[in-house]
Length: 206
Image (cartoon, rainbow, N blue to C red):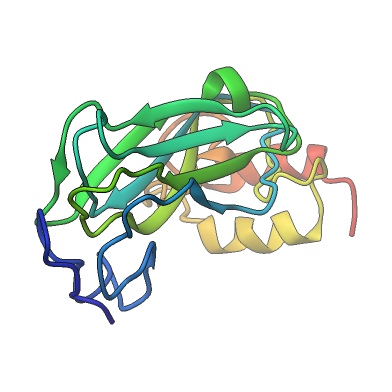
């Protein structure tokens, strides 16, 4: 892919942050002069039961000073009202991938439909840069208000959660693996038979 864009700033990346797939505006060159806003918008994301939601992604961006050209990150929970959570406040000329962590809690917390949008433009008639390149988009919350034992967050403690419990089970001499803390009911840093007993009490069936 890419590697284009030369008038100002730096070229587009030649690969993603972790692989060859990247979202971006014109992966092989600069954005144009005199362009209106052009946006990449996600499908709806369910943030029900989540609090303190943050958006993370890796960015490789080139954009002129905002007196001339603009780049935005916006969030909505209804596709009508959009809140800008980031915009360029100066020229941006990334020459490497840059990690971004944005607090979107004011719009996303507890919402069943959350939309993320990266916007390129408007631009003036002078310099052009490589624009947005985006990789490894993720969401996390600082407080999950879900159900204990509900690993997949579907509101039930069922067979799918049991299957995941089996992969997380360590016994007395183990430790809590990545993503398995939801099964450590007694908070003793392992997932053992005592935790399984608590899981059984919550189990609602297939």
